[in-house]
Amino acid sequence: MNRLYVLTLLLVMFLSCGNSSNNHKGKTFAKPAKREPISNLNKEEKFIAFKLDTFFTQLNRTGTFNGSALIARDGKIIYKKSFGILDKTTKEVLTDSSMFQLASVSKIITATAVLMLYERELIDLNKPFQFYFPDFPYETVTIKQLLSHRSGLANYLYALNSEVCQPNCQMSNNDMYCSFVTKNPKPYLKPNKRFNYCNTNYALLALLVEKVSGKTFSQFLREEIFNPLNMNHTATIKEIDLNGQNITKPYDNKWKPVDFDASDYVLGDKSLYSTPYDLFLFSDAMYNNKIIKAETQELAYTAYSREKKLSNYGFGWRLKDVNDSLKKEVYHNGWWHGYRSSFHRRLNDKLTVIILSNQLNSAAYHTYRVYQIIDNVPGTEIVEFVE
Image: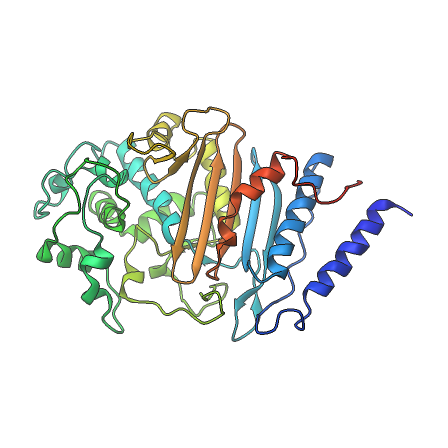
């Protein structure tokens, strides 16, 4: 009997057993979506897709992953699949069109918007933010420092805690800015002293995009990035119905719904919704220099915090293996309320790894396992594959 047939039969039996509620009492599962066959894969890519499917299916079976994943290399999708629940109440399952809150992965898009305006000579990265907003009280903080998280500013999520916690409030970026300027919280550090990750930086950059473009931040992203790239399932929280079709609901690791607060409506640092496929379109466009020039991307992928030894930060991108041209990785993870997200890109072989989850568990961050499978690292073999 054909070995592939036997392996396929065993895998189906394995997955069927994994959906038994008797094995995982109290946990909510849905059947994983059928992996969409990708007809133009070669034998090696089919083997990789098989191993990836086994890996993500096992995570879903054990209740440690509810979400969607996509892996591509050099513009070619090798694997994409959705696992689990979009809405626990309705039992609606995740699909390719299910939109997740990207959390801090949104910062990549914000930085790209700023760099687009930089290329048009509408933003000077070395200018103080005060040049564009004269009432800004931190006069030496520059645009470059905001982009690279070296401003030293206090985090508005903590500095404006009383405003954020107001019930039934939807804080805008302008609300955030006015409250921040009025309170004038003491900076954590002097500007450019060292790296200090801070959501305030990117909420301010969203305002900067609005100021110099003459468009709302949502409008700029939609007209300048999403529509041209056919990212049809990507939008800010301001432009979606949270109870509408394809919008995922957030949960903690025990499937308790996670409530929103006023800060959910501040843009730039988070609050962008998207799908793995749309982020793949963005990644591929970046690889092909369709959004910003290659030399501008180099600015984004440059390490600006030399005091950081193991990893670094550019403009909107975290950096790994900065000095190794073969391994250099640019990425961002996100964690906000019930959402976790990973968007990783290895520049040398144009690899893209996207994992989005609407449940608060750490499996969305296991991108290193995906890299091991892609690179055929010893010890990651799952079962012999026969085409």
